[in-house]
Length: 169
Image (cartoon, rainbow, N blue to C red; front, side):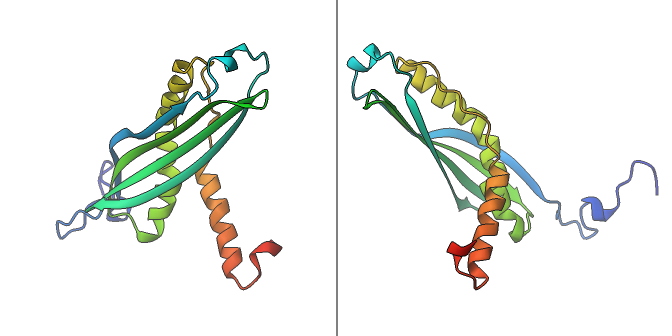
């Protein structure tokens, strides 16, 4: 075998001409929904207390076409100071992903672990800009290990289905 040839087991198309190589790519990314509320302006700007920040994440995915999946990273942020709401941000940032020849057992790990990791830096920037444009210092979220979270939730779900009560884990 020549030095620059790759055996079929490493992703070379099948001898019958069919392309069976797994492939994943980003088609597009976009803000699906964005809401910023500043319900106590202008009084909240008089507060000298740093706001307490509560951040919640949710990830959803669905097939929207042949080999095309939409992944939505939803981020909700609530900031409170002096017992009043400083701001609320609700962002749904989505991406369209082309997934071809991906084994079924690898779809969820990609859609719920890897795809959010790809989307997160862009969603983080949109969120930071919205908070800054609302009159507050930009909110810069720390990176999140979406793959690790997916694996942890999967392990918890499997433990719950193994016959043991889920509450005893």
